[in-house]
Length: 132
Image (tube, rainbow, N blue to C red; front, side, top):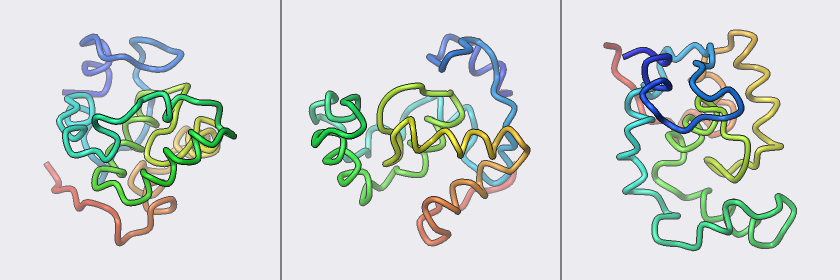
């Protein structure tokens, strides 16, 4: 399934609903797996007050959310989903929408998603993705 097919399948995306964001997904989680959302079952935020993740970026709630994300076992998938699907609001993978903007700019220049994730999370935190 291509990114375009995933996004047109009714998944919520950012400002360009239904449009694929043209990112290089080589070595990164697949668009299908990210859209599926099963990774969320292992998220540290699961069952917590989601208001923390959608509070004003400079608020104490938002800072608490970011701290919880730091040790989350699915931080990579969360950040990848936030970037790939153009999430305009909230904390995704431990980054606010303001912090994600320069990452999206890098992705739009052709930098692979896996490279951007490694830059933010460090190589040791990345889940190895098998080539299809």
